[in-house]
Every structure is written in structure tokens, then in C-alpha cells.
Image (cartoon, rainbow, N blue to C red; front, side, top):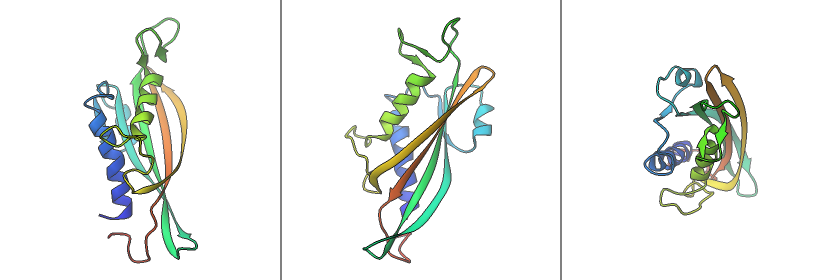
Length: 159
């Protein structure tokens, strides 16, 4: 597998492994568009999208690296509350709680050990930016994670 595939597969593996434990509230993890996710019937749903990136030179190694972007979209129904439909501190439920769990899962390998290098497929530095939207009874939290992959030689992306 190549640089891009290895990184995307590691992101996918972490989230799917956690769906059995930490992220058990998530009904479905899928690769696709946010529009398709809004049409789902059973929430919460986590959607992943590869948002592209940039290949950049890596000096002084005379190699390249990818600045890769992954969009992580959480669709969560609003809580049935008169005062706060975003989170419930008494039950630790709601869109914000689940979003923070997703971010925690991305910090760790499938065995639970903290690993910001995504199983050696990226550097430890990454940026996560996020927005929150509302669609009728849904919260949509859209996070974009940008990470630098490990360096690769020209012609060596897929090895």
C-alpha cells in the first residue's frame, strides 16, 4: 500500500475498532459525502471523506511528503431537552460528548496506546479544524484533520 492508503486505512481502522467500545453509540461509520449521511435514518453516523492534500518537497532529505486532509463528519440527533439539545452533563450524552470521543480515538492506536503518528504513517504534528451546523433535528459537526505523511522518494508513493 502507498503513503495515502496507509494513512487513510489507519484512520479507518482506529474508528472502526472503537465502534465496538468507546464509540458504541455510533450506528454507522462510512466513507462518502455529508449529503448522503444526512439522509440516513439511524443516527449518530460518522462519515469520512478524503479531502485531498498537497505533495510538498521535504528538505534536506530530497524527498516528498503529503499534506493530507481527511474530513470527519458526525451527524447526531439533537437531544430532547428544553434547555440544551447539544450535550447532557448528567448522562454524558450528546453531540459534543461523542465528538470529543471521536477525537480521542484518533489519538490512539487500536490497542489504546497514544500514537500521534498514525502507526508511523504520518508525523506527530496535525491540525484539526471543525465547524458545527444544524439541519432541523440534526447537529452536523465537520472536522478536517490535516496531517503530514512520512517522507517518500519520487516514484515511491505506492511502496
